[in-house]
Image (cartoon, rainbow, N blue to C red; front, top):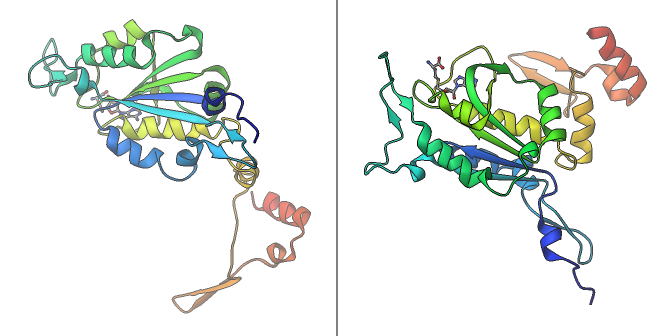
Length: 240
Ligand code: SAH
């Protein structure tokens, strides 16, 4: 029997490690354990004894676990007054240290703070992140936001997922993980990768070739049934 050369090596993540700091890890994990992202976090058994490494790793850290006061309080009133509460810096900084504080090469770590006032996140940024970093720490805010010293202390960048305000940074963090993971080699299957290239192709159809809805029939355009890829591309280009 052939020996698996180095178990450690084979199971090591060769792609990207995401670290999410959030008060709601279980909410995020339900999403990241499903479908493409779920598969990318698993080692795969290929033919024979070959084990293919994970493409991504996702770890969660709850600031509450790092709170030192009796009631595990992670927020407090803002200095200078104003409505709402602010997430305290201490527990977040401790969570960050647990995630990437010690052994990691600084240049390969990127820390992002979710904020509606941050740099707008785009697919281009996702590609850059995937190519440049080994570790991305995503800090999810709640309440009125996060003590500004977290940004300074961690040399972090504020990132926004769009011009609207959500109740928390969990959906933004998940969006960034999702879009960035798609850019990590091997995360998407061959077919999905092809689809990725055609993200702007627009119209697409599947069986049946005719559907009925409220007494009206809807047919798949003939050109799609033909299977002539060039003709289909031409049709799509004209429609743009
Ligand atoms: N009044 C606060 C709103 C905080 S919303 C402010 O003006 O900043 C609570 C948290 O949700 C924020 O700390 C941030 O982490 C997250 N959040 C809300 N909308 C967001 C967006 N569009 N992009 C990224 N994060 C967002």
